[in-house]
Amino acid sequence: MATLLVVQAHPHVSKSYSLQVQRHFLNHYQQIHPSDKIIIRDLFTKPVPPLNTTTLTIREKQRQHAPLAIDEEINFQEHQAWLNEFLAADKYVFTNPMYNLFLPAELKQYIDLIAVPHKTFKYTSAGPVGLLKDKSVVHIQASGDQYTGIPQAKLDLGSMYLKTIMSLFGIQENSYHQIFVEGLDWGNADGEKILSYCFDQAEKIAERI
Image 1 (cartoon, rainbow, N blue to C red):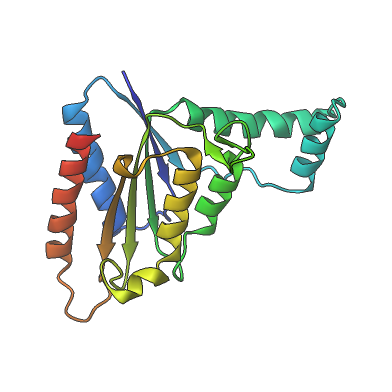
Image 2 (cartoon, rainbow, N blue to C red):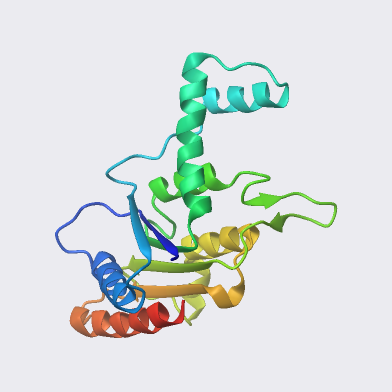
């Protein structure tokens, strides 16, 4: 039995194209993998623990093998729980809207929490090496404009960043999948046609991972 962790970095809105694609993907995935465990980590329901002065103090104390204060120990254990949940999963789905060419702050904060040396990657004399092996990622992102396959693709900094980070963690190119629900704010956009195309993509990816 595999574990699929869904990192949902999306506000709770009544009509969301990316969340509709996520639901379609999960429904199809469950049909194909009925015994797999699915965890939905909603970053807008339970906020990500911040990286702050306390976090940096903890890391410095740990390097010096110094004891932690009670509040520091609580902070450390909370961070560890989020990190361990990520590490224990076999497959990941990241769902988000594009915000000003980037990811929502909640997703960036989540990435900062899980990007931990010696856990998701390590430093070597030849450069960083990813520690996540044989894992898959699906990225579902909605945007008002279109960016895929045209010169504007270089403006989609968020999806490029997420893919780069996952590569740093060790996710291979053939295990990284993207579904872009895009062009939604065009004056003549056909939302149902866009959804239908993305549903088809979602089903094919669900069958592949």
